[in-house]
Image (cartoon, rainbow over all chains, first blue to last red; front, side, top):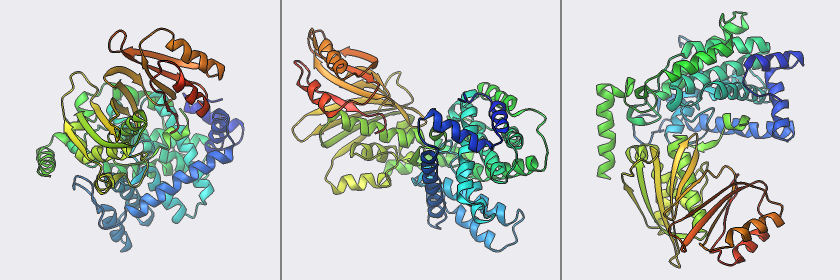
Length: 296
Length: 220
């Protein structure tokens, strides 16, 4: 049984058994949870359905968060994408729109899958849904990719952290992005080694990202970081699939990420006291949001 | 930890600690009362007090009190539902010295005048820690099957409870006893392996000097 403390170990086992990381994690989790593989796939399929519903609901033009700070950007992104002249292309604009939609729906008290957290809940749907819709990846492959992403997330949770309060945004959106990169490589048929390189590249690109939510709410800058997290996942996956290797192995990158998180000052770990949250505009918005509440 | 701790839980946003965890605290308070609540008082402290409107913490706790789970799609409308059901509640922001940053105190009353009070903290990722039960110190998370047994503080009550559990082959993983004052009311909190049956629960409630027995199932 896997201990989920080393990505290399998971990749080695998968390669030894001549299966993908997703398939190997699935087999291991069925064993550890004393259940059938089909049962795990069934629940994972339900999680994917919740993601799909959130993406649809969050794309409505009238979506507004509780604070009134955010909403409607997914709709904007989709409308812009329809004009077919986006810089990043059709697939990427859909991926960004999906990530924003799910993250905005979360801020509007919608039903989402914390994957790994609520603040980063748009990133995995942002790669899975466009892969099914645009690249015609079948649903079963997307569900296995989600299992692969979950396996990667468990290792990050064990070796570092998935919480913004503990490790900054690198731990939330960074981890989600690494998990999404892994899912993309898995869906594209890359090798377990390629999955690890994609994970390492994605994490390296968000190393040091601080958690600095305006007014302490999961909205600014979180929602847009879901969109950029998707883009980092896509670039990391494409690089890995091209055969580009991360010079630093994924397990070492995760350890570095833990050390960076540990040395992050408290003001930059979800306390809304530093970074974007401490800008003059953020302070003014914070006052507005809380005084609006008082009048109620 | 398993894969669904990472790809999950399914929850109503925006925050696992300020929304999902808050709903769980309300739900546990309802279970402790063990009757339909007819009135609620909620105190919010720390970051709960500062950000509850933006995170819907108030809606989440009220939803939990009314029996909704953290993934219930009615959760955002819970305040309107409470109003429609003529369920009166108050929400205050308070300062509790040395408490966890996300702490709530929930007081509930049933129609017959029975009441329950819990203090709970949302400790991250939707996980909670109940820190006080009816004014007495406590420490349980609801992640394990948990029995909460208020009883008269006298000899033999603990022995009676553990014997009953043994007869049903239920192993105790953790045991905690708190009391306000010698000879008054005390509370046993037991985390157990395996499932407590309705039959065992009835038996526990009938034991001498046991005032009540509440069972929280881990997956509830």
